[in-house]
Image (cartoon, rainbow, N blue to C red; front, side):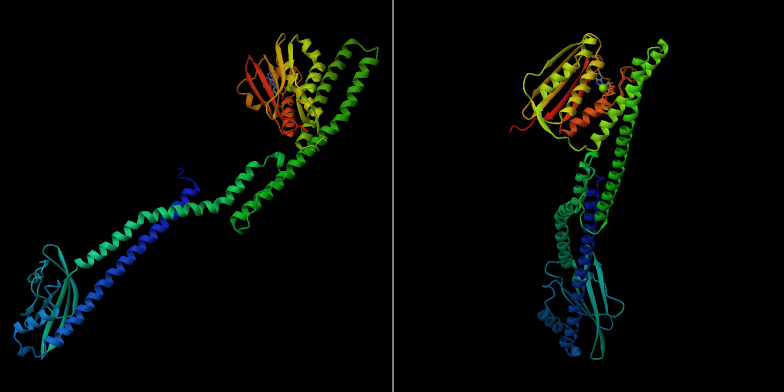
Length: 468
Ligand SMILES: Nc1ncnc2c1ncn2[C@@H]1O[C@H](COP(=O)(O)OP(=O)(O)O)[C@@H](O)[C@H]1O
Ligand SMILES: [Mg+2]
């Protein structure tokens, strides 16, 4: 369980709060019931004491103590009811005292004679840990002050109160369960919009920056959050478009002067006959660099157009196997130069829907890499095949391979695993970025597996054109 999660903490706080409130309410109930039980008994005792005074103690001097005792017994039967009644005369002598109750719970003679005849309610502890509630009621009859003491052991309410506590506490585990389950559902429900925002945000990439997060009209922090994030997305989209437009414009602007420079340099070496050999060589090397620059500019232009999600050139359905065969034939000179053995396995017709010029670029870039990074007399195998819904185009070479730590970066722009060697071979590290952008634009993927010094496998997977 993740104890730092918002879920967990909200549920914990919520449950703790509910349980605390319930406990406080339980304590309040307990206290209320307890004081009510006591005060009711006190009132009953006071009332009875006055009844005894009015009905039995009248003409007290004309009655014998035995007469009084029998009257009290017949009306109140204290021993049978577990009650204590004692009447003291003004000289603190006992006029009447009830007998030991039937169950022998308390001993009336163990209850101390009070010193003053004031009205009082008190709890007295008797031997054997018996607690008694005793109400003292002073009354005056026939000119003499009497104290009537009425009492009962408190264990009967203690039992009632104990029952109450047991009931309250036994409900607690269920309550905790219900409260946490309810809390969980509540938290989940209220965090659902956050989850929606997260799920949508996860889907947003540079390819679909125009998408927006769902705005929940709650009028609170959640709505503000989604609105603010959407504003941020709008700014990001704007900035991203500016950058793509800038690189597209820049590479576009560079193309023309570069073409002119190349033309000038070429015509210089071809037409000017009187040029000294050293100058001709230097012009040749400038021309080479200019060509490289042109190539980079072209690549950058391609990338920025793909980034901008170039207005999809009309998509046509064509045979990928055919495209691979013609393209490899066109590049066979490069293969022969390095005495590489190239096998092309592309017999089946494999129809895909897309821009053939762009997909040709994929083949060119991948074969170019395979040739560049495979030593003389190496082997390259190209195959085009299909699975259920996919066209699979693979390039396998037994060249120098890619170091493990470079592998995650090879699709990055301007990334080259071996800078020195790659530069010698004229690469700027843009080829694979272009391949990936084209594959993605066609709803496909490209993956590369490689072992250093063993060889490399590049696999392009494209959706097959739906049969018509
Ligand atoms: N078939 C391959 N064999 C070995 N290394 C490769 C292969 N294809 C690509 N790489 C590595 O990936 C890097 C990036 O490839 P790419 O984007 O085409 O750039 P480059 O312009 O260098 O060819 C290359 O510099 C090279 O280090
Ligand atoms: Mg390349």
